[in-house]
Every structure is written in C-alpha cells, then in structure tokens.
Length: 104
Image 1 (tube, rainbow, N blue to C red):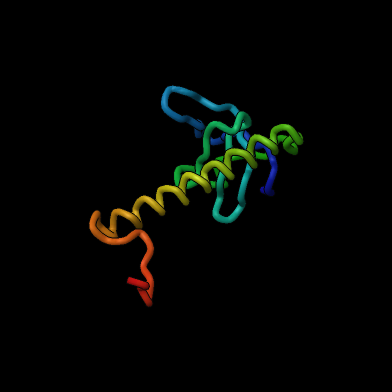
Image 2 (tube, one colour):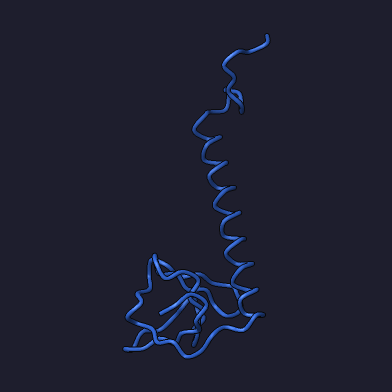
C-alpha cells in the first residue's frame, strides 16, 4: 500500500457514505490509514483498514488535485471548529484575546 494509490475494497468490504457507495478511493495517508473518494467528496479514516483494500493503479493528476482540495478543506474546517470551541470555553463575558498587560 502506498500514498496516492487507487484502491478497491476487498473481502466484502464496501465504501459507503450516507446512501452512496464508492467503488474506488485514493490513499491519502498510509499511517494512519486515510482514504479520499476520487471525486474528493468523502474522507474515510477511522472506519477503514488497510487489509480491506487492494491497489489497482496510481491516481491521475486530476484525481490527486481532488484529494488535495478535500484534505485542505477538512483542515480548514477543523481549524474553524477549534477556534469556535476555544471561544465557547472562554465564555460570553471574557475578551477574545487575553493580554498579560492590559492597557486600560
């Protein structure tokens, strides 16, 4: 198994998301194992295992572009969620930025 490989499920495993079934995916990371759909609309990490997939080919440059866009979007979403969670922990009556030496 290697990064940027296109894989298909084996051993009866099925890649699903909601009502959709995906016949192939691209390996975005080997450790920890992470797959992205060829269209870039889905990421699987905790629900997939490397032994349930077989490499069929190398991803094309356009497929890799979809993977990169999806991973970047996921990273941005996580960063925004982290910022929101941090603000909620601070409470509504506290400043958004904490200063050691306030000027007032």
